[in-house]
Amino acid sequence: MTSSLKTCSLVLLALLNTHVQAYTCGMGHRGVGQAAAATNLTSAVCEEPFVAVGDQCLYFATFASIPHLEAHQMCHSVGGELAAILTATRLYNIIHYIYNNGLDDRHFWIDGADQEQEGDWRSSSGAPIPRGTPFWEATVGGQQPDNYHEEDCLELPAGYCFYMNDVNCLYSLVPLCEQPSQLKQTTAVTTEVNCPTFFVNVGGLCLSFVTWASQNWADARQSCHGISGELATITDIEDLRAIYVYIHQEEIAGHSFWLGASDEASEGLWTWTDGQHVTMGSPFWGYTNEHYTLEPDGGSAENCLLLNAEGYHYFRDASCNLLANPLCLYH
Ligand SMILES: [Ca+2]
Ligand SMILES: [Ca+2]
Ligand SMILES: [Ca+2]
Image (cartoon, rainbow, N blue to C red; front, side, top):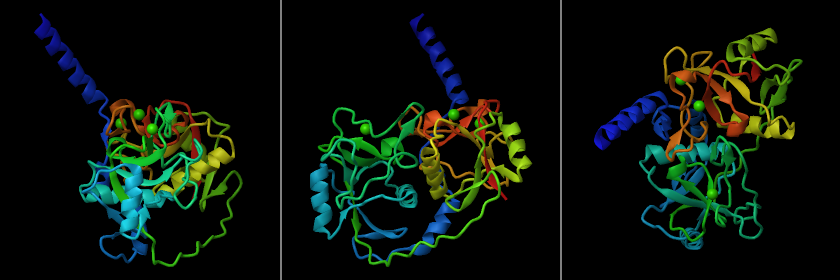
């Protein structure tokens, strides 16, 4: 009786699993992402034991597992500091490197703490640590840092697909050090972008956040076509960051937005409306409630790409019949 019940529930579990198979973090990074090509242009020149990761010189001290304070000291001893991750591109590059080099079972210390003042996250040089998406781990319903049992130090953990998390400073983790870059800071070129009516310049893209229309995915696409646009394609992590910052600035972060991607044609194969593959994994896709798993998690019941307000505007798969606002890109 008991064993047949057990078998029954196991079969049921297996069935459930085939329906809502969440994405295991990291897999997307073994493929070729569009953002990776763009960021290889400014490789740093680094001295041993540092390696070039994007424009940073980093040292993954994988032989050590030590508390936060000692990790700082170790980085100082190699002429560096714990690595500060202040841009979305840097986070993307580091996550990419971690997966490509088989370091994805580690938890790393990076530069950042709120020991001085609770909730005020600073690097050791005093720079504010960016908050929100696409930096910090977020499920539907909650985003780090959560100061769970007094957590004042910043980690980049395997368990959260290398999204940021606040943890106890006395935990033993691997130091991720950075050597002050010899690279000259390239002055950001701000290109003047003039966007047509209904579109605003967000990070160099002409976007329309159609908060006045609540529609299913297909209708939202039609709305974009109506203003000479298309549901937005987001291939650069800086664009996701720019959108996140903009919707908070405009106080429209309570809205959820449709993006122009789906896996309707072939379950699990996410493509943009122009046929490009969607970059999978962190730091694009939102976290689920299970460790080591990311969205998409809805199987064939969820085939459209949503920037869900409750999910902190990370990529999440949702039912195409859901009502949300179109996010259009002018083209
Ligand atoms: Ca936490
Ligand atoms: Ca699907
Ligand atoms: Ca989902």
